[in-house]
Image 1 (spheres, rainbow, N blue to C red):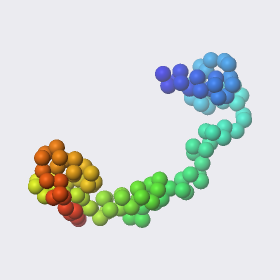
Image 2: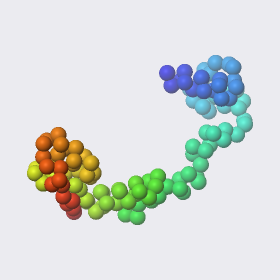
Image 3: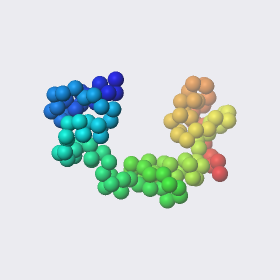
Length: 117
């Protein structure tokens, strides 16, 4: 299935009519003497893209934007959780605790923020 998809991609995007028989993209390049720059493929692995990621200052994680990085810091490093006051249920998001309260018929107004660390 994957090989079939690759074959289809090669015929459509690289204008090669011959059926692809190799096992990798490197085999394809050798088999069909493809030397033109593959800009669409290279853009997926450009080093510039890695630099645009936002690093966590406390660990080696990288994130696609500041919002995701800040959420990571609050949840993982600061240990913030939302907790249902009627039972011991805790979660990183208020939305999930509210969903729990509705499902469990608890008062969704009784949600508190707790720090696990």
